[in-house]
Length: 502
Ligand code: GUN
Ligand code: FE
Picture (tube, rainbow, N blue to C red):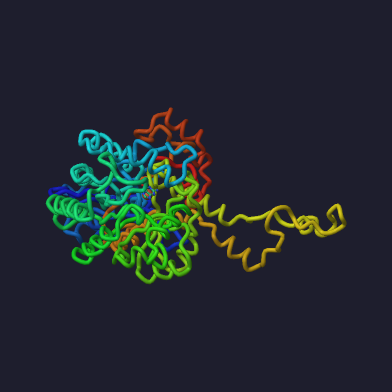
């Protein structure tokens, strides 16, 4: 966890460290010592170093005495990895994970989501839901989360308290929504009363977070217009002005679903496109987190890139709600920062590792042929259709795909290295913390998870502390394990991505 409290000791971590060197490359540090000072910053990274050597050579340089250091030594098969960054998650929807049936975005919101969120007007209920959500996301290795809360100030402030108490870095957004999606509002509508009330409530949460974490070191407010169709022009404009006034980050949804895109076109006829709705309000810039971005046009991609806004890629949600496939490679090639979002409960899992795995799988779907190949090609021209003509194939795609198109399509595929980058450094860029979290570098925060791959199959099974025989067998059955001790670290990491859990 990223938690560091006053009076804590210096820390020494020894073992294997793995992080993203760049988008498509992991870096492995074995037998390495990482020194962390009392403020939680990494102050030394030393290779070929065990505890004894660290005490002899590093402590004197750092002015440390052994009594003043907490030491953690990774066991065989364990490695330290930067904490995951969930760039998009709805904490109040946590109890709904897995509930979506065959719905799509707009009916899903009205059927499942708004009733659940509305129920967090009850603060005791909010406490139960938010405590579980923070505990579970931490258990999944999420040391930073970008949260949508609800419209309720008290419950949103409580979420900020719980994150701070648990040591989870968090951006906590009180949701702004003052426009009904389902006809005229009534007394039971889950909505802000007005644009002015929406701004006032947002300011109340900002004031609360400032009171509990004055420099927003661990927990920060984030301006959160739910999405354009749920906001009046005035509400968006007020949040844009608040962004200019405070410099706070922004999060919202964009271009997730075709019905939503059509709705935005109808609601905002003056805007050139969906992204322009936010841009006109002054909401697009560095540290603006745009969730989904499935259907952005080339003009919108240019605008998002030029403003320096980032994207939260949510493959679990985009699949579950049949929203679509975000063109991650296109976004990256345009220089847009991309992180991963679980989007609970559009997404059914609170695990960023699951999001990484699904990002890899969905990218493979993007990379697959969109139409059946022409029969003539497979049969190398030997087989002709009944009427003696070459079979053009059924359905669409009688046209031969050009070599260029095929290459572009296959380039969509994301590797294990790439999805892990998105889960860490990509997300850090999206939230403006690229210099602070996401890697093991001197000057950065110690913000890490210790991943345990079981050591079954090694001679010293007896010595594996804390892991029961049953647990080892369970891990082995899951294929999570290097049974024969012959896997490279690259292979172990791939198995972690595709088989790993909390
Ligand atoms: N668009 C507006 N609100 C939501 C939400 O809660 N979840 C998702 N996935 N999309 C949204
Ligand atoms: Fe969402």
